[in-house]
Length: 320
Image (cartoon, rainbow, N blue to C red):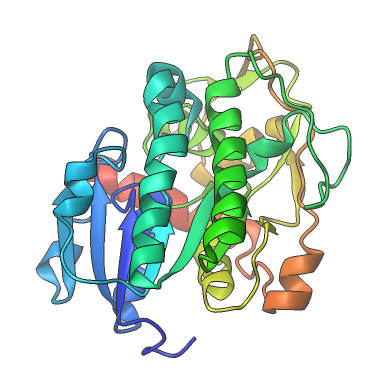
């Protein structure tokens, strides 16, 4: 992607884990970036270094609040809608807010993109597939979601957001795309957000038992955050509407993931099995053929390199 692909970009949820990496990458490419975030789940420290750089502006506000949108300066030619609690600990704590940002927040972001003539990308999720009966999951799969289960506030928020984006494109001609992001890991994850990688790393570094849910046989396919950002921006720069899966290609059980983290950290931690959450998917792996063929994208950071980078960042954060 050329550095002058976009002059000004808006990233909602830009202080979050993936959002902050997107902001940094856009700045590196020469794009001016406005980050809109209410800091409900993403700490300001994620963007404090970016605030020292020219071309970056942080606006504290809620994507569901019309006043926050009125406060955003100028016009944008790219709108990346990443505002939403994404970890179980967060969306279970903020169930109504999660549904609101998927509905009202998405509607506001779409209206701004349409008014500005901007390219719009929705950050959707592999959770739209629920506990999938198809494996690996293709974009054509409709999913197996419990609409009233504890995870439903996140799953259905994203499913509704996808429907809203599709309707806006059809009714208004808005230039939209949908990316379905599978499990992503890397620096700036929060240790208490309930996701496996930061939880296991924090436990290993503290010498505590690694808490593996169930028997640890459930699988995920994780992608390092740099690869995920590559995929998002490749979709943004394309003419594709999506949805397009972006995720890792190596399927791994949670028990094996825990063992690898213990090995890399050199920890003496043991494995402790705990109850498995309700509606926790048994298998999760994306079919990324569409991303490979249409976007020329594929994950490039391998397991050992990605985990070593992430563990190194956590180690430095603890030391600081």
